[in-house]
Length: 185
Image (cartoon, rainbow, N blue to C red; front, side, top):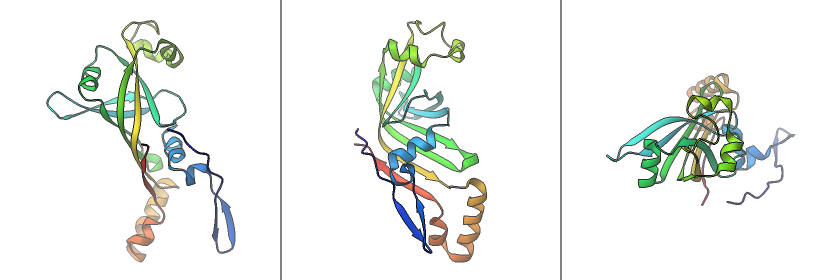
């Protein structure tokens, strides 16, 4: 996927001009901004009975460009489930910031030793002996669709939006929240 840079946009409110960031005008950049500090995601595969199977996964620290990266074990049930059905969902939540992201796409298990070495940290010794452990694999999820919900200002802004909605109506309250669906394909 190619992301075309977006020039800063300007909006006027009562004669004051505010510069918007790329994350505010480009949905891919917005998703990148929302997930960059959330280390743990929930990754959902489909098990052999056709049921969703969720597990927490540590997202690897790399710039979001339409793909998210994880390390996994070649012997895991998740790898078998992906081999049978590579369509997955990945969700991120930051309740304190009132930010939520849902991604879906195609997962691919790779034996990319250079990337494994780059992603390796001492924290991973809980699962593997070292980056040369032959069981470690890279899991790449190529995102096809994304959706996000963000309330700038967090819980205080959410409470304000609830009161505003009760007084002025739903449409007025929705203007304070940022929500979008994004197609990457």
